[in-house]
Amino acid sequence: MKIAIIGFGAAAIGLLEKLKDSEHELHVFEKSTDIYSSSISGIRADGKLFVSNEMGGEIYIESSLQRKFVDYYINFTENKHVETGHSFGDEKYYRLFYEKGFQPISSEFFHIGTDQLKEVLFNIYSHLKKVKNIHFHFSYEVKELEVSDHSVRINQADTFDLVIIAVGRSGHKLINHAITKYPELVLNNTKVDLGIRYELPNHIVDELNREMYEFKVKYRSRTGYMVRTFCNNPSGYVVTENYGDFTTVNGHAKMHQKSNNTNFAILASLILTEPFNDPIGYGSYIAKLSNLLAGNGKVILQTYSHFKESKRTKRLYRVQPTLDPEKFILGDVNLAFPRRIIESIIDFIENLDKVIPGVANNDNLVYAPEIKFYSNRLNNLTKPSLKFIGDCSGATRSIIYATAHGYLMGEAILNNKFSNINL
Image 1 (cartoon, rainbow, N blue to C red):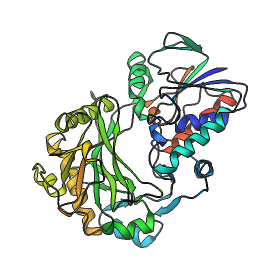
Image 2 (cartoon, rainbow, N blue to C red):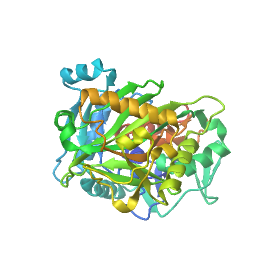
Image 3 (cartoon, rainbow, N blue to C red):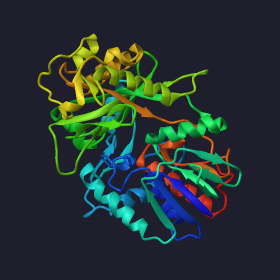
Image 4 (tube, one colour):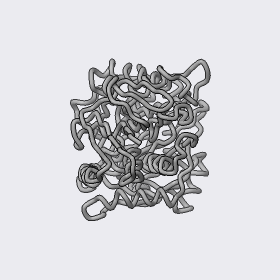
């Protein structure tokens, strides 16, 4: 078959690894200008890999396959040097959080670091580029799809027997085009995570950072929303993430360069009901409203005490931001976020402070918006010639799960079962 793979990220890498040297002709279309482009965002920053059956996606991935791809990425580093940790491997910490109402999430972590990722991605690309049946096309953005039962035409030009979309969450424009044109693709589209990036001095969480590297917990807030931590970065840096028409906040950590602060996301999960059917649109609206207040390309920064009191922050105190000053404005997140989200986050922080004293210090920093798009859960049975893998499918939300999802799709293609297997 002649197969088009749209997007070159984690899911595409897993697919290509399974299909390399097969009889299929593989064409990878990537809108970035080259391998170093920042739009390959899913594995561009931080490089946190984990093995867990409690997070990472809506599909089941065998632990052995997860470990296989952890080793895969680590083997493409120069000296296989990574930071490791085990979230709640110690029962003492598990009980400590559980007693205060938190649900600890168990996971093994392997942190490559942003500074090693360029090398890892280039090495993977160089490895795959040498394979005879794989052809890369950079600076090629797919905007239109015409789907029939036996083929797909892209951009009113090239026709393929099978098109596999692997654009991640940053490819929401193409996904919106596909589901607008073919609404029957959507299985579920009611979930979005809204929240903040929280930054505080290392010494407050030093013990946890040493023990786990990343602690992951969930908490049912008094509003009824489930709130969770995400992407903890010891001695890390806060950064912005550009989605094209709006900007959000994120965090990462480097292997060799360290800061004095730790940052992590605090996210409230919204599961909305009919007639709601556009989680990406809702999250995008909140992000754009925040950007409107902060200025083009900027995010809002606020101290925790002002965040609680709905007051605009005009000056900082002891905790200094790691985000570039040109990328934020001191302001008030309350002007952009729904009040129920704010109350959920405050409830989470105040209770977390009972386990980790100092987490609720007045001068800790709140950045907004941080939004995690789950994407619509898409049905891979609807169109025999069109498939979705990785985070854009709604089935995964991590590097390892997305890579494994692509690999499993490749396995189904080799076994000629891709038409009737709903991965």
